[in-house]
Figure 1 (cartoon, rainbow, N blue to C red):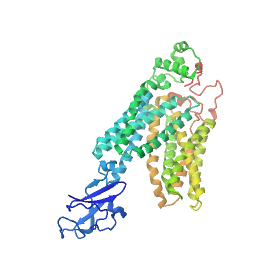
Figure 2: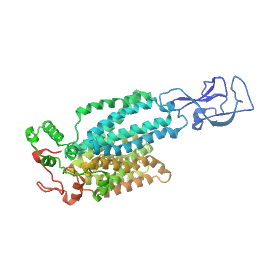
Figure 3: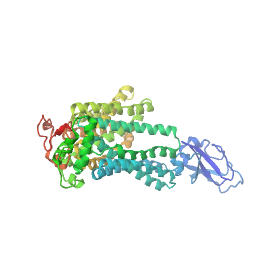
Figure 4: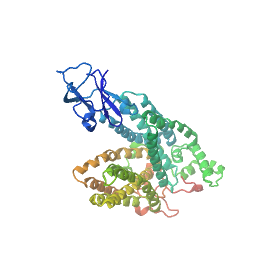
Amino acid sequence: MVVLLCLLNDFLLCCVVPECDAIDNSFSPSWWHDSDPLSSKSNRCKRPLLNVTYINENQCDNNSFTSETTACKEWIYGSNKTIVAWLDLACSPWKTNLVGTIHSIGSVIGMMFGGWAADRFGRKSTYIVTSIGIIIGNIKTFIKSYYGYLVVELIESIISGSALGAGMVLIIEISGNNQRVLSGVLFAYAIYVGEALIAGIAMVVPDWQWIIYTICTPPILFTSYILLLEESPRWVVLNNKLDKARRLLKLINKSNKINIVDNDLDELDDVKLRQICNVEKESKREGFREALASMDILKRVLIVTVSRFTVTFIYYGLVANSVWLPGNKYVNYALTALMSFPGDVLALYFMNRFGRRWPLFYGYFVCGLACIASSCVPESYLWPKIILFMIGKLTVAACYTGIWTFTMELFPTSVRGSMFGLCTFTASAGFMLAPLTPAMDTYSPILASMIFACSAVASSVLILFAPETKDQPLPGTIKDITKSSVTAKNINISSGEENLGYEEKNVYSVRL
């Protein structure tokens, strides 16, 4: 028999006090030096220190323990429905938080790996294999070792991040010139819906193991994508799989009712197939080495990295700071989350209407101004302060989706996935630094907003050094990028005019 000193946190947990051989089920045992152990956070991981000069067999009383405390060594949990109980992490908050950190790191590594694999092995195969691979997360429910759990968490997050990277590349490449922003918005909305579903699942299924089963088991259904999903036509042609390219063109012809005779497609020679897909024949495979040797590619990597760092830093920084706004913190957090939906709609309209560069320029600039203005408004002006804050969140949400699409359009098919992953990896510091911004209020209430604004203005200026990509065919190779070193003044291409290195081919009016 042992004494259990019970504290009520998110669930019932009891510190084992082995010096007594009776069980005291009270939450305020008479011998505990604090009359209300639940009122003190410091008591959560402490237990009373035995008074060695006093022994009263068979029970514990006020004299059995001193007023001093020592660290609790052993816990009994009232429920095993959380990983805290499963891995015995009652007094190890840093270990609990490290699980989320490891997942974030793995996701970033995964997006980089998934982009490379998509370039090397194909978009479809990489996406399907990594999507199915998420079922490995179920193994976590059988692991009792904390470090073993972290290893599986890291592997699962790398696999899921790879699926995200490969899926983003694929959805952009199978979209037409006029639907690329729409595909990015739909991709973002799918993520929002997934986040909401996870929250709903957690409410209905309280046991953490069943939550894992519910999330990590359905990916087995992605095996059906072997039959349902097609490879990117551009990647197929670039990698000289021309027979498969002809089959895909027939499928596109049938699905879009272009009214081209299939026999005509069968008779297309290699040259015309490449013209349709705006892909030139290359004698060697392009990869990281070739990409980073190109100054044009490096310039685009710099622009995208800074812009994506900014948008990630501000987006998650505003989310973290939303609970400190005046008024109801739950309402403010909900409003902040809801701003992502109209923000993506704005991105869809303005980027399809006016191109990529200028909407992103104004989006970053307005976001920076809104952040500064919100921080300067006194808290007594409740709604003006909240409205300016929400304008910042609205515009950064639009830039978030916009810069994802722009990233895909700036890099050639041969290294698109690799460059997307590299930019994601280098810009991930924004995601890691964002949770620290609320602490800046201890130095100055406008410090975080000033950093947001400076970062946003820097990105808005850099965006102007990138070429416009609206209505332009996706470049196929690094050679296309080098030959097309375009600026804003020579992007408006009239009908029949050469497109600076890769012509806008209209063979049989099939557009990829």
